[in-house]
Image 1 (tube, rainbow, N blue to C red):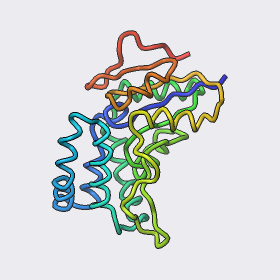
Image 2 (image 1 turned 45 degrees about the vertical axis):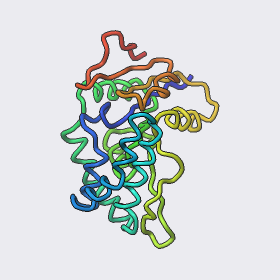
Image 3 (image 1 turned 135 degrees about the vertical axis):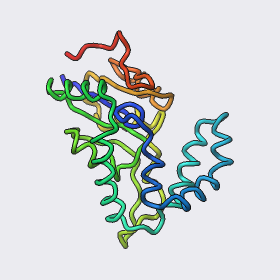
Image 4 (image 1 turned 90 degrees about the horizontal axis):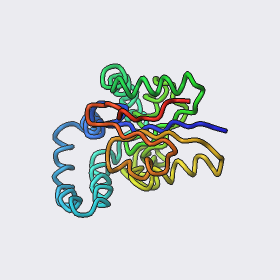
Length: 208
């Protein structure tokens, strides 16, 4: 039987939120601030309707990424990934990832973060699969500002994992830190809720 270890990224593997940091790296502080201002009413509404967070994210990406070269954004993503992996990982969670790899388990990152930096981060970490939010690229090689499919958050995380498994029987360990990981953790055989300091619960399932 296959054994899969699925990790959320921001707040779980990484000790910080990386999305806005990367957006600022690509678009600059001023344009990012304008995009956040445009998304502010939707973010306010998300306090009562969590689905509005996906709408707000789409607004920010549309305003900051549209028209930019995909190659340029991915080049920045590779540099950003080296920075994150080099200095912004939770040691306990990274150790679990290393232990899963040593046990021969399949490693998957399931995250609402962007593939522009998660793909190179996964390569640095020895993770074979990334199920994350991808940006649409036009025929001219420039970003349209739109997301391909759905934002990989909440129920979409479990859906993407199941689509990737494609009906295969597998024992699943899942690691997450927030309500955006609720469905992923619920779907796992061995859910592990990481706290804000990146610590594992005392009763975390041993790696077999």
